[in-house]
Image (cartoon, rainbow, N blue to C red):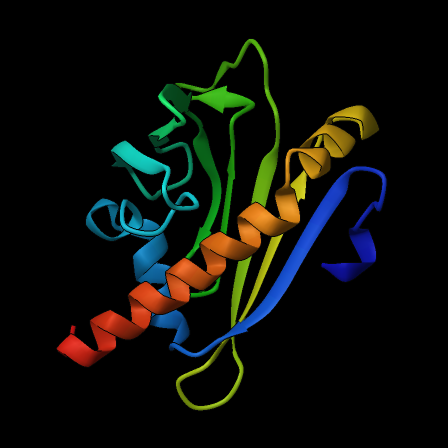
Length: 161
């Protein structure tokens, strides 16, 4: 994957997470889990519909400072416990979205016992959109979300989930 990155279009966040990749994947693909960590607090997810298969819905709605934001898209690639690719360029039924923003490419690799090497790539259609996403706080926001994901997954592990 690293060979096909374009620094003018792609924003990349890499972290090692203290939780097994199967659990991280489950947190990404189960609405009941995703709503707990998917947006930086104090913002919150208000609705989530995931149909985790190629062409299936990847829809989230969240509230940010009183504004409701819908993010509807589809999965382009699903490799359980290894990779998720989804985009807002299309919606269910492969209908083109009027204002696509990005495609997300997530990979999960073993990084030792109970640890995951997590990589998120936000791929944009042009350099201007990538710069806009970076200026919106991509690194801080997505970094906060990964920390929340790790904390949430560790809580599930303590509960024996």
